[in-house]
Image 1 (cartoon, helix red, strand yellow):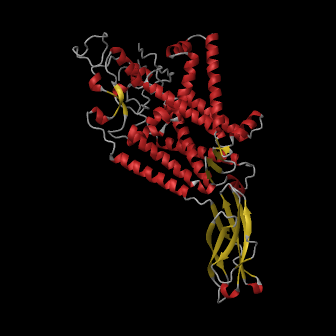
Image 2 (cartoon, one colour; image 1 turned 90 degrees about the vertical axis):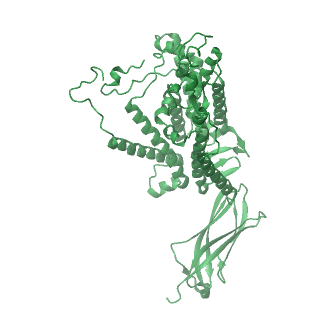
Image 3 (cartoon, chains in turn red, purple; image 1 turned 60 degrees about the vertical axis):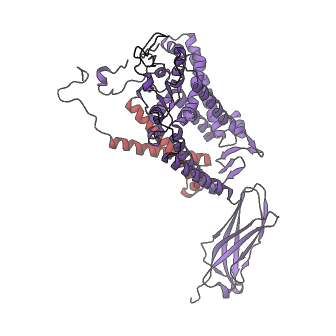
Length: 102
Length: 463
């Protein structure tokens, strides 16, 4: 009954995994941080203090804050990944990829 | 078979390319339990905003007004510290229940699981079971395929949008939101969040599914540190199952040296994350127990006892006794209990009325001639009661102290009242710094009495 060919289990490519993990983790941290931040700071008061009058409703303030934090986490995570990535091991000298058994 | 050509050794393609996942449907005890959990949890989520309590929405996190209502409880911005406490409690309970019962959260209660379950249910209702879906995908685009695919997408999008709308309904009163959405007069951000949350639901439950658990979920990676030998896991009984192999029904497999596993690979086919549980516990396993149901059905057919794959613990597999009390559960349990007690008692002790006295920082003091030295304050009364109250304000703490403003006022229910007051102290008692005491008392018989201290400043003696 079970032809393993049918159940082609997907593996995400490394790049998709990176983007997905990055987006999701920064989303989660941004959610928690914006909940905690806006619990203590009223966006309208903040807007008043920094003189940005284009933000008129609290909804807009919450959204801006959330996306700011999300972008912030994303950028920090992206740079961290770039900076700590390890060098990929290539083929040894004289060896050709994909040819012969290895 | 795996299409890892030359052991996957090919530049830029270190991983198998993406394929589509077709988990086989499964029937059984745990599938029923999971479906039940889905109905209960989705029911709570979708009906939640429609519950009423004392004439208002029972659960409403009123973001525009910055007030949270949870049944009889009203949280004000200054109470939001409880939210932080709640988040910590949620994390600790996850630790606690993980140590006890493994990934019970993943298998039954995680929103990712619940909505994936709902979306696959729609999928199989419209496109048919696993083999029919695969045939449909491989087949040419004809009318049958077109309408099934369209119907599925329409249902998915409708459910996703309804989810987004319900979600926003927790943050701005859902009855008013419904009217605004129906009349196309909703604010841009409300519409945005409905679409955003709807899109997230569609993407997570419709397409990414268990990939979220495998690659994106932080809990999946950390859960092993919360496990111990007594944690409930889905496990394959190797001693009983091996050596595995096909056999004729009714044959005496034991005399032929075979174990109970008939190697039908059903447990692999039903697995939503595509692992083989017979290789042991793997981090991808979300403990959904689909393989348990699948294996039990085969064991029933073969007339073997159930439970070749089952919920068990590592110690139980070694035929040792199960221990409920162990360092991990005791520590997690103690922390959790402390937090619960702290939260409940501080909520119970929350003052329904708050008095704040803020001294005017612009002027140190004012000499008002023969009357004495005057200080000004801003008095803020926060009335968290639903009912309005009448108050009278008094001052004390310094001899001859006098309140210049009208000391009686009324504060409406659920509102903040701000009153600038001037306090005068005769010259002979005013020099230097003193503690001034403000007394707030209700005059409507509601028995509220609050005392708040502040500083009174006068000229220094030798200046």
